Image (cartoon, rainbow over all chains, first blue to last red; front, top):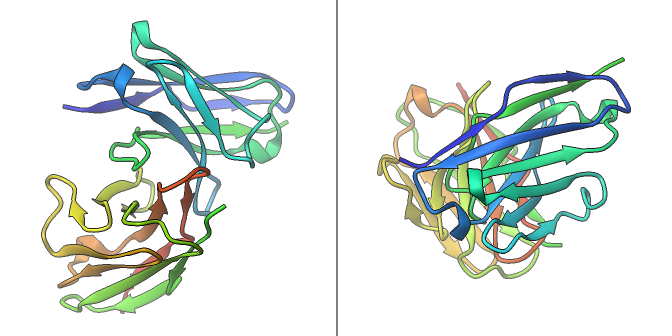
Length: 115
Length: 107
C-alpha cells in the first residue's frame, strides 16, 4: 500500500527556520517524483516544487523558487520541505504528493507562523 | 505558465443530479490533466489522471473527458458524500498548475 506520512503540526515565530518531512512507503521511492503543495487558509491549491529522489533533480514553481528548499534522503525514503526564515504569510497547510499527477497525498502538515 | 480556468467556481445541486465541471487550459496540454476532490479538513484525493482514467477504487459515477485545452469532470448521480471542492491540475509542463476549484454545495 502506497503511503505518504508527514510530520506533525508546527508553530513557529517569524524569522525562525523549519524543516518538515514526508516519508514514503509501499512503492519505489527513488523512481517516483515527490512534490509539495501549499494550501493557505480558505484558499486553493498551489504547487511549490518537486524532486526526483533517484538523482535529486528538483524543479520549483517560480512563486516559491528561493523561498523554500526541497530535498530527499533516499536511504530513509523521506522528502523534506525547508524554510530558512519563516514569514507570517507562510502559515498554511502543506501536502506532499507523489508523481507529477499527484496520485497519492500525505495527510498534510499545518504550519502556523505567528509572533 | 499554463493557466487553468475552472468553471463554475461554485454550484448548487441536488442529490441525484448530474453535475459537470469544466477546466480550460491556456494552451494545449494533450491529456496530461488530473482531477481531485477535497472535503473540508481533509487532504485532496485523486479521482482521475490522464484526463479520463479513473484512479483505483474511485467509483464509476465519476468520469473525465477532453484533450488539448478543454476538459470536463462529470458526476453522474450526485450523492451526499460528493459534496466537496473539485480541482483540476495540468502536468504537461512545469510549473505544474491547478485550477481555482469548484465548490459543489447542496441545493
